[in-house]
Length: 216
Image 1 (cartoon, rainbow, N blue to C red):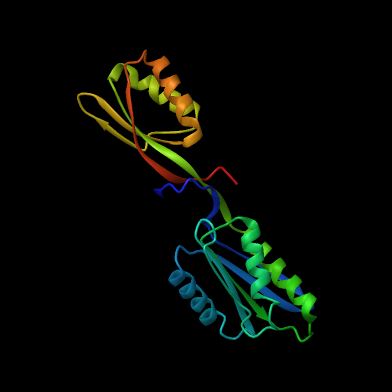
Image 2 (image 1 turned 90 degrees about the vertical axis):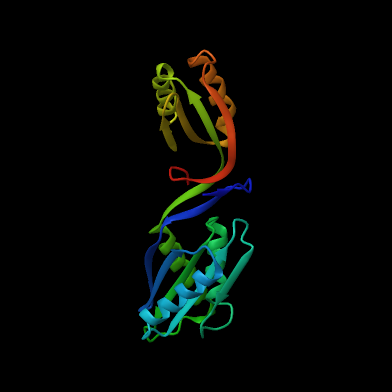
């Protein structure tokens, strides 16, 4: 969770692996979340060691909410037939901070330029299909102070929206931190005022990007 950049983009909740076969050549796509270039490079090297006996370990990664940093490698395949098509799939998917390595075990039959592009493209699609993907959304963290008579109403209101307190402090008063999507904030504040007859005090603490696991 980070301070918001007022952007929404898809993000891996968990990586995955997919496979595609073309004329007996196996293309194994491993997809992993990487927050920095260093993490992506480390992941690529890890895959090269794991699949040391493969003919090729082609790679691509996309770092930053707006894809500020991208890299790709054909790893010995004809120029433009592997890394670039792989990167285009990542960019087109909208997933950011992600890296993919496609490992090829040669099947003895040459695929040609078009065949290679098609195979590496499809392999990445299969890899992404095996991942769990969510979306980052701009959010607002609110601090709400209320008394014990109204806390049940507040929790019920949050429950209706499928939300729950981020943090809770029970002292002389009840203090809750609540993280909501930015577009839900104003409506929530109006409803909070209604259900507590204006007794609950609410302040905007921070704008944050958060991961919505229910959004694709």
